[in-house]
Amino acid sequence: MDVNGGFYPNANGSPIFPGTAFTGPLLAGNVFHGDGSSSLAGLGETNIGQANVGYVQMVQTVVVTQPLSGSTTVTTQLIIPAQSQITDFYAMVTATVTGSAATFGIGTTASNTAFTAANAVNGGTLGQITSITPGTSATAIANWDNVSNATAQPNGPQDVQVTVTFTNLGSSTSGSITLTVFYIQGINNAS
Image (tube, rainbow, N blue to C red; front, side, top):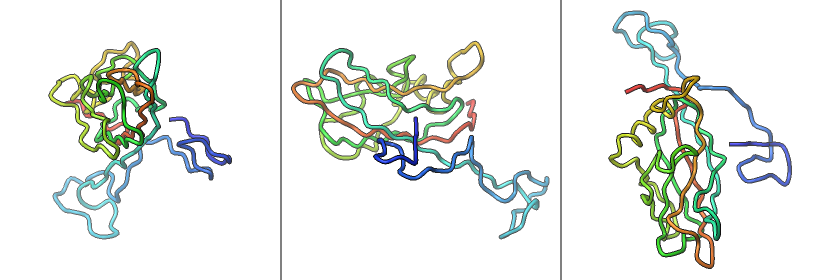
């Protein structure tokens, strides 16, 4: 996601004030390496007991407009770091998806069905959709569990760019959604 903070008027997805940037992944906890005992750390203690570090969940969001002509696939500015675990996709339908079918799917530039089936999400009603899942596809499940790790790359896993493929072009008006992805950066779940 391209973020350009500190400018007004600020573009969608960019704050008016500059933010603090980290390369990540972000970790939090007070015992990074266990001491080999079965003891649990106490409040404020460090380097005593079992490790209690966790990953910080990240989020990216973008507005996606249903095309009226050309391709039904929209390439977004959502870029998920390689070896991340996707925990959720949410869609806020701000203008209903139009045409003979009000559905869409979520994928990548390499595969339109990388994260959901082709018509898995119904955008025909205004409001928030929180029930977006990979379904029962082993490939989609693997893509959620460890982004890009299931795909052979010459230089190892690579970041992926999210696409939204609408089932059909908009009729006389375009649907519009705000797509949000939640993920744990670089956790490398090779299940």
